[in-house]
Length: 149
Image (cartoon, rainbow, N blue to C red):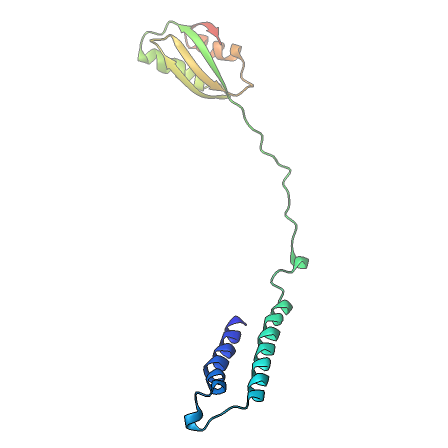
């Protein structure tokens, strides 16, 4: 529609305006001013009706809209807790590895960082994991738990 309007406007401006201005008098072409005024009015009428034709085109039809289905399955946020355990009896990196393996075998433990130098383990767990379960896992591995914070 826009291209059509541009074509007719260009056609009118390229031919009719120089003709109405008297540029082609040397060739014997003249235009009665009343015909020029009528042509200009007709051109304006065509441009306006072409522009109004856009109202007939429905780009967005709300009858075809669909509702978005909302999901009631909200994801539960799993909160993590960090617990520090004081462990005695670890003397080497091999001991660290045994305690780490024992702690990470407990269901709900996400990560265990064990240090034989600090005699501690920092454990990232789900809230459902109790201190007693963690202490039992370390005790079963052969080490003494002095406290869980």
